[in-house]
Amino acid sequence: MKTSIIREILLWLPMPVLGVINGVFRGLVLMHFMSEFRAKQLSSVLLVILLFVYTHLIYDRLNLRTTKDALFTGLLWMVLTVAFEFVLGYVLLNQPLDVMLQEYNVLDGKFWALVIILIFFLPLIQFKWKSNRATKMSNS
View 1: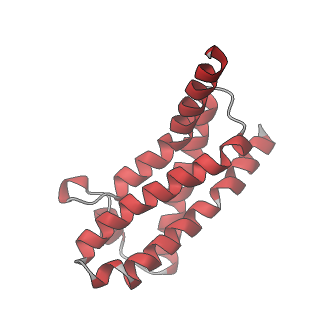
View 2: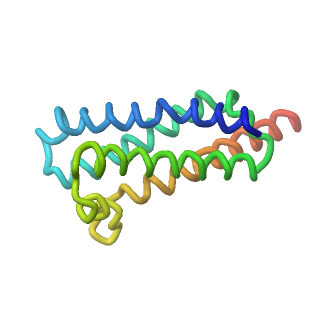
């Protein structure tokens, strides 16, 4: 279990890097063509796509054997992501906590909470997808 957690943390590490690259792309490109609000929404969708592709590429290294494994990995990744975000924003960049929490308000059209929820489900989605494909392949 201990090596599994270390492996999952190491496989999570590129995810915030993808998030930072996505944020830079939002600031340098998207915000020249649309409002900050729309750029953040589109950026969230792009990040979801990037994270889906990334988890697809690393799936075999995750070594998920059960739904429980997938959910545990997703929970770990979600906690790490939120912790990273708050350490970076609140501690290092001195952003006010209320401003950071506003990004989680789905009712205001903010997509960040949906990205966080998807991070939780990504390993499970990949696990189910790969399991279904393996079952179909063995039945053919």
